[in-house]
Amino acid sequence: MQKGGQDPERAGQQSTALGHNRVLERFLAGVEKRAYRMAVLATSNPDEALDIVQDAMLKLVESYGHKSETELAPLFFCILQSRIKDWYRRSSVRNRLRSWLGRDDDEENDDGLDQLPDPAGRSPDELLEVRGGMLALEAALARLPLRQQQVFLLRAWEGLDVRQTARAMGCAEGSVKTHYSRALATLREKLGEHWS
Image (cartoon, rainbow, N blue to C red; front, side, top):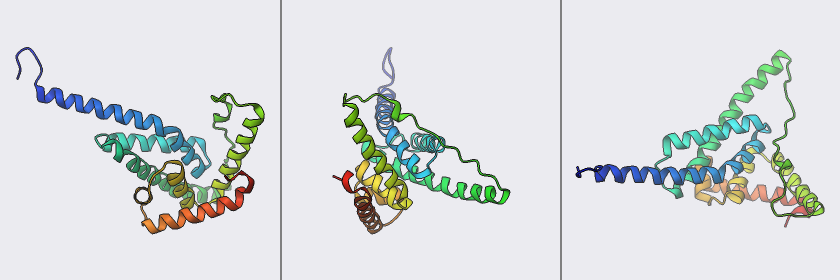
């Protein structure tokens, strides 16, 4: 132990932990909105989507907070996909019970993102055109089978490669390629004039 100071090994460990925390915070801040949008598209329920994303973030911090920055995205999206699958399992049981009991509690919710001002300062006509394209894309994505939808989002929006996507989805790389190809073909067909 150094005189009048802290053990150099312990100080180094604290510095490393602080560095990991900063990397983790930066990653989570950068991915939270996109992950939320993925979960909303998968569940069609903003409240459930928020719970899923928060649960996935908590699991990442608890179990993988020490991982390097390059490992965080594939790990996080693997956790997120697992949470989405779990939600589908639970909701299928709930839906069976609701139909058996004769209850239908579905409620239309708005996530509020469309109320934010445009940071790029585009004209209302430009915003309307962009919004129309985004609404068409979200509607088309919502109609895709879940696996195609999630593969498309991981590959196109998150920029994961085939191997990382396969790991996140828990499937073979060939399945990722097939799902992605089918999703692209369907989206091109459905979006027509919006597709660029």
